[in-house]
Image (cartoon, rainbow, N blue to C red; front, side):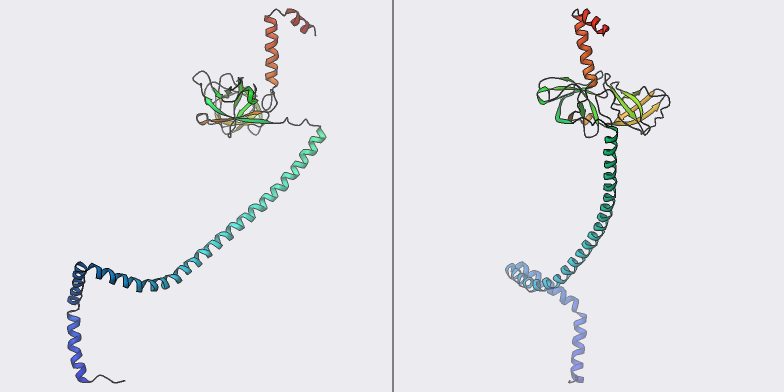
Length: 307
């Protein structure tokens, strides 16, 4: 390789010094010249920019592919990690469910054996229809709602009206195409219930407020705020175990219950026939006896007393 001679070095040194001294001015001038060219000949600038873009695009594409591939590999690795954790969680949940399934099957077998041993009468069949609340004539002195189903739909007096949250009331009046539901909060509503883990018996009495009262609790009953209230099954109208609400207040003035049902957003009711109309049949018999007595049925009353 030929080394530069002394004369070449002497000529290049002033040029290098001159270029380093006026480099900024040359760059500013070049930028200004490009601006003038862009103003005067836009087509030339656009063609040049397009040509440069066409040359640079394959390079950028080639450079970006490894980056995209690496990002995809990272995402797949993270996805596999998440799937592995979720799979492990599902395995644990499945193992717990299998344990509970075994417990449930054992309890079911024991329950069937006890039912057979005690010759227990099975619960009646249940049927239901779903109706929409079309009227709310409730006010300060009445708490009832109207539904768009009646006798032609199979609705009968005494059937339970429930929502997804719990018991709302019972059917009090039935027409051909509509029915009236007496809510738990109505002053005429009385429902036998059990309270808390001690299953103390009581009667839930409505008083036209959103928090009905518990009556007729035993002297040894220990009721606390938060105790769950369900139907007891006594009276022959509701089956046992229907959720009603929780105890919301205990004071000298009484024990209040907050129902699970949201009265302000009650749009649909499920009318359930548990085939348990003991009190309703009794009321019908009492009404028939009173009607017979009012019509002059003294001999019928006398014969009943004789029996």
